[in-house]
Length: 109
Length: 206
Image (tube, rainbow over all chains, first blue to last red; front, side, top):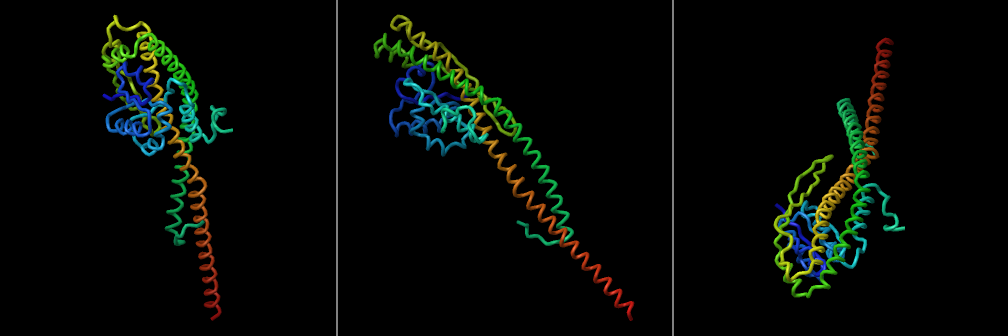
């Protein structure tokens, strides 16, 4: 059995903690990195991570992108989305097809 | 660019075989790329819409939680959700699809969701937790399909590279080499024939 985790700021983690998710409350650079390391050590299948937290550790996660688990899923925090989740999606499209056909207005141009 | 290979009949046969294999591989890989592309296109639109709805639902959940927070004192709220009685776990099933292994997550929720007494908490908190709980399966599903999409994209990229390498590098090279060996061989043959004719002339002249 695998666990679900959530890395995010205090307001975001609070609501999900009641549901039984393993939450990591982060606010800065080092504690976000710490949370990611912890998540990688344990057997998490899905890690929800707020876009703002993801932006802090994007480089780090990129280095570990060969790992099958956990799967990181971007969620907006309670201040709204900053578009990273959709950007990641449009990156995938660009990689597969060559041009972004769905999010033209979000991507460049 | 020709491959550096001795122009012998053996090599010619070997190379011709390689061309055949390469062409067959090229066709297969091209078919694979097309099929991957088809699946990718089928998925992508759904995933995009799913992401947009999930993000919207999540914002609603945050909003309702905010309401709950507003009507309860921070200490009581903290106390209420400090020790969750519900446990969520995920089981993973692997689905093989076109040489990629995609994970499919199933969410299992156990135990009571409301980890607090009814007396001290407000009903807004119940509502907020309800919305969070409704979003969670969607989030897990989104994670799984986005993962498959990512894997698909990677596989498409890889396959496309292979197709192009075969089409524009390997096959032309092989064919050129086959041609040059065939030319060299026929040149040798012609040389042998003229030599024979010359010898015949010399012999007859005696």
